Image (cartoon, rainbow, N blue to C red; front, side, top):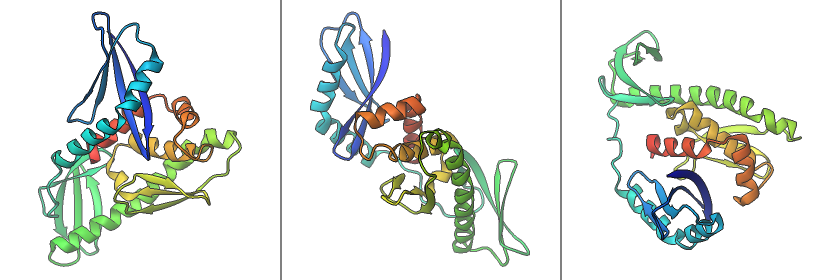
Length: 238
């Protein structure tokens, strides 16, 4: 059995799929799994263009299945912002510890996020303090990632875009016509490799405005494992 990956565009949606080839298989089959994995089972001698055409043909059904699994998949319980619960930072789980201190602050120490407030801690105060810290860290980390990921684009003659960090409910990032990259602040909870994927994805739009074949060829060239990073992002934050 051999394996390859592919991608097709369906409206504004990107469908990533994995192809497994079998010597004993005679027909082409498509499966959508609860972990959002799209699997194509194909005969060994199946032409790649036939696989792409089949996935494009079934794209409405695939999209519907993915949406259903996303809607019913378990989510992290609402945070209470009390000692003992866990919070993500750059893909790692940290145990929250709430204490009183001279100033409001957040520190990371031995797997803990230690949140200090100036008075007896109320969940609302802890939440506000932690969110300010997340926003500050997001601006710093995202800026560093953007600078590092932009290098090949500078060599291609592009101008370094500006960066904004915002709360976004349906997107991980966007690139405006004025070359402003906006990143979802919630990305600071994901592994750094996932943040790099989103940044490179948006930077590719400096060259190709839509999600056509040229866009994905450039993305594949600059980040060959982008599908793996995208799936990891979905596993961690969806």
